[in-house]
Amino acid sequence: MSMPSPVSLSLSALPLASVLPLQGSQATHWQQQAASHEQLYFHVDLAHATSKKAVLSAIGLALHFPSHYGANFDALADSLSELDAGQATGIVLVLENLPVLADFDAAAADILLEILQDAAEDWAQRKVAFRVFYS
Image 1 (tube, one colour):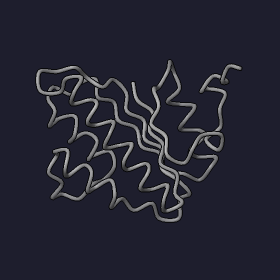
Image 2 (cartoon, one colour; image 1 turned 90 degrees about the vertical axis):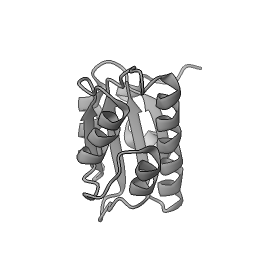
Image 3 (cartoon, helix red, strand yellow; image 1 turned 60 degrees about the horizontal axis):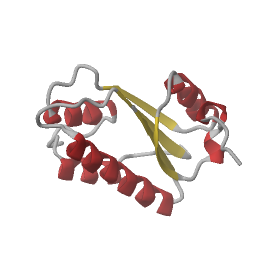
Image 4 (spheres, helix red, strand yellow; image 1 turned 45 degrees about the vertical axis):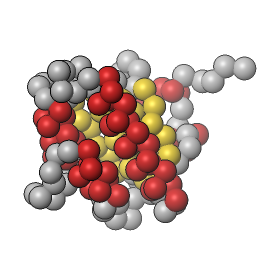
């Protein structure tokens, strides 16, 4: 049995903790889904990121991390756990155009996705959905 296309899915059909590939023009779909489910929506286009620090800084800027955010993997993990979801029922983060750079290679991308998965699981334990879509 095949799974429906992610674009046809509702956020409510996904696990509370999800880190999934983004396909095609899904960013708008997930933005609309976030709005209809009263969830926070953050979008980060990394097409112009030229370094690991630029990738992590762009994520921090989009998620409104505090000014002391260090733009490294440890700071990202800490800041994700301290996000203020307010009254939202969840958080939707879309990361588009993850780059391949000298200091942000496939291994660094894997670390980023692991940190996001850990954050998603942490938020799910708090009964708050945390879903990430990336390309």
